[in-house]
Structures are given as structure tokens and as C-alpha cells.
Image 1 (tube, rainbow over the protein chains, first blue to last red):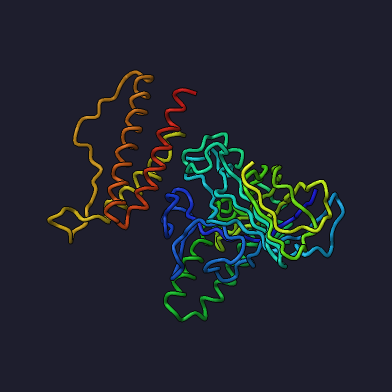
Image 2: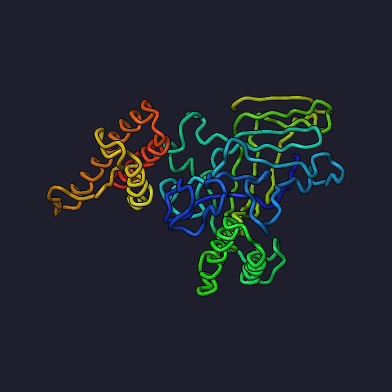
Length: 291
Length: 104
């Protein structure tokens, strides 16, 4: 078994309840597009953020370590490779239409790609193997739940990621940076954007239990087996192993530490790749369709 | 909970879409302004079971009518077509979710 551990900050520019899911600028929720930022689009960007806000965390979900049958491979070329979700992956809750509880919604589509140093590994998960082309609104609840999450509040993961002692410190530090920016900003659009962002900080200063602050402790945990078509593009045989596409690939990951000002969160997890019995054989390109 | 998203995912987006459309063919320079008035009496059924059944049927009916509207919007290449399609897909799922609660 080949194991890939990945992690990093991602961006997700989404509207929040009670705004409709497709609200483009944000009105009634606690997230907004400000200034000349493009409309909110809900896309999960694990790399290549769009209109990343000032003082946001550095976005980049990358491979952090790999191992083979428990032995860590410290020099493997996949270390540092990008981890991406292709084709506009989004959290698909739609204000309780597709999930009964916050945090239990599926990420859809789930087309995972890991690429770097001449290796490209890709595999898609299919919500309903009998109806792979059905829209998500036609998928049964139990199949959505398979790819859904388990929601918890976890202060420990916030501390692990931010190295800060509490949510207030995180928010107040950002607020101070934005206030300093506002002092020197002269462009009216920039000033308007900063003022809007700062107005949001005033809310959780008044009400410390507000979701703007509490969201830093939001964690969604997911675990399922990726079951669809995939490919390994490895023309120079750097990967060193032959993934078995005929078996599902278990993935478990969490996303949380939701920074509603930066519209970013943190993601961390593990992907397990079953290997063909002749593991260690130099891999070349391989491809497999649906199981 | 099956009915909960109606306001956020149907009524409000529908109101926003309507307000972007011309008031009439003769007044294309004016935008429509939905009032969301009831122009007839709403007869409340005293019996829960039949009432819920009728609500489920009405949800299914309006989801089907919205599908026709969505198709028309797409044919006319309205800028609101994508949003109407999104409303329709969500409304159809709301109807299905509601009916599922009636027959678990």
C-alpha cells in the first residue's frame, strides 16, 4: 500500500446561510465579495487562488509525505506535489436541500489530482456508479452521505494549524493588519473593501460566540473510497510503483479552521493507493475505467 | 427540514430573477416587481395527512412548471437562464425530499 499525506490551506469563496447558495456578492450571510473581487463561485481551490485577500494564509494543498507499506520515503518525487480537486469542486449542501446537517454535505465533483515532478496521478469518485451522469440533485441521500462529512468543533486543530492560543487572537491580529492598511489606503474601492472587511470584525468583537469567530473551530471529517476512473501519467517512471485502479482508494481528510475573512480553510488528510502485486516495478502510464 | 430551504433557495432567488425581467412586452424599459400577494383565499386543510399530501403534490407541480420555465429561459437565451435552472433543480429536490418524509 502506498500512502500519501497531504495538507495545506485552500480557498473557497462561498456565500453563507441565509444567502442562497448561488448568491454572487453576499447579502445576508457572513461572507461577501468586496470591492472589485469577482463574484462568489463556491469553488474549492486547493491551489491557484482567485483574488486572494490581503493577509490571507498562503494557499496550497501539497503532498507532505509518502510511505510504502509503512516505510517513509523521504526523497520520493511526489513530496511537494500539488493536490487539486478538478472541475469546480464545491460543497454541495444548498441550504439543507442536499444535506440535513451543516458539515455533512458532499464535495462534488470529487476528481482528485496529484501532480508534480513529472508525475500526474488522477482519480474520480462517482456518487452513483449505476448512474454516473446523474446530476447531484438526483442522487439518493445515502449515496450523498457516503461522501459527506462529520461535523465537529475542534479547537485543537485550530491551534495545530495556526499556532495561536485562541480564536480571538487570530481575528484580532487580522483586524490590526487591516486597520493599518486602511490608514494608508487612498483608492476608494480599496478603502471600501477594507471597511467592509473591518465591519465584520466588529460583529464578533461584540458577540464572541458569533460564527465569524467560532468558525475557526469548525471541522468536517470525511472518509470514503474513491471508486471511479483514473490515470497515472508517469512517462519517466519516477513514481516507482503501480497503483491498482481496479480497487477503490481509501481517502480520509478533514477541512476546517474556517477563516471567513480570507475565505480560506485548512485541509489535511491521507490517501491510500493499493498497488499491484509487483510493487516496486517501475511504473509507466496506466489508465483504468469504472470498476 | 425538507421544506426549510424554500425561502432561501426558491422564493428569494425567484424574486431577484423576476426583478431583472421586463415588466411586460409593452414596457420592456421597466422591470417587474413581484408583490408575492395571494389573490385568493388560502383554504387550510384541517387534517394533517391529506394536507401534507396536497403540499407534496403542489411542490411537485410547481417543480414541473419551473422546469418548463427553465427550458423556455434557455431557449430564449435569457441571462437568468442558469439561475432559473438552478432554482428548478433545487425545487425538484425539495419536492422529492418532502415527499420522502411522507413515505419514509
